[in-house]
Image 1: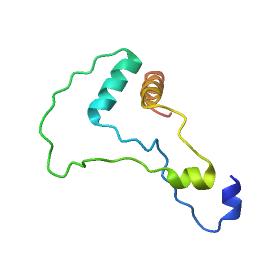
Image 2 (image 1 turned 180 degrees about the horizontal axis):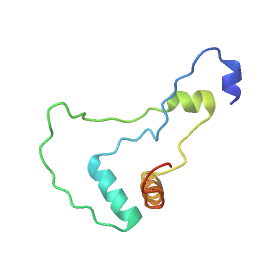
Image 3 (image 1 turned 180 degrees about the vertical axis):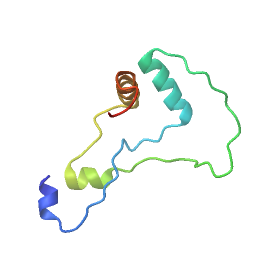
Image 4 (image 1 turned 90 degrees about the horizontal axis):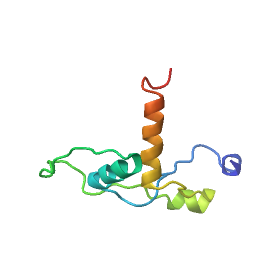
Amino acid sequence: MDKIKETEGVGIYNLGTGVGYSVLDLVHNFEEANSVEIPYVIVERRPGDVATCYADATKAKEELGWTAQKTLADMCRDSWNWQKNNPNGYE
């Protein structure tokens, strides 16, 4: 919050772990974190599919002292717990 006071205008930061995960990584982490099985089929890459995508949070770490505290498994577990407890979303 101190950074907001020091800066004029808008500051833009990527927030993330800095690690890229595949869709299959996500599926396996979600299955393990929530003790569920997700059926899937591996197919060819589609035209336009992004090869890699991840957030480089270096600027947030350097300027704000921010680093991700949650693992992919934590995020999968927490998001599923929220969805189970809020099936209609925010009301």
